[in-house]
Length: 335
Image (cartoon, rainbow, N blue to C red; front, side):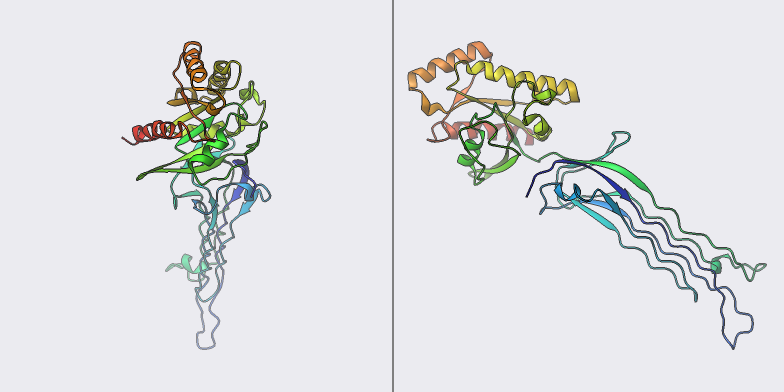
């Protein structure tokens, strides 16, 4: 299934059914009174977070959704049937944003959470409801209330605990495959990961979700590469795992590129990604001897102004220490 995390749709509630104008016509009753029933209520438009959906792709090919009109009133004081509600099912983590104003109307973060986007129109009154002591044969009625419509943007932000950041081919997918049952595509070329993937990490009685995001490149905040489109998924995370390929000539420069892109993204979109807690790890540690790795770690701390761990997701060396650091970030948010 293709992944789509943002889409614009048009929604329209159902109009109310019209009230009826009717009079009793029975042989035994010479002067039959009014018996026109009221119209039924139009269908509401709801959004609901469900567990068996993880993409907004279904809304790409059908951008307009309309609830049905309520049934019209009928003679013999019969009220029109209320129209069924229209329920739009979305993944947990979906924001509902009014397209015109940009206002966030709802943030559906929990399974089963529902939001009433548009109420259906109330049914109109039939002529029976207008009968009074002085008006025994009214012909007044009202049509049902008009439908309401709105253009909204659905924006999915994955509900992950940890977001993985790094340049393309930094080893993010290899790490996710090593610590979870997720099976992301892994290859020795940039942009192997083309869409976010989630992996569930279990350690003892603790577990947390890790999001593998497409790699960032310089200029990502301005739209270069792939990763900029998915940075919004990091906003819900307790922290980030910043992976840097230790085999690069100057790994601290790669770290600075990503930090600069986070700062640029924050400035552009008013987010606070660069302020999230982070664990910095030099990946592919099996490519260097122990003494060479120690030298790189020391120089990295001096040049990048931050301490880093080293690991090899392929061999498993250092992986447990990284997972423990990430678990600490998740626990800190829960406390």
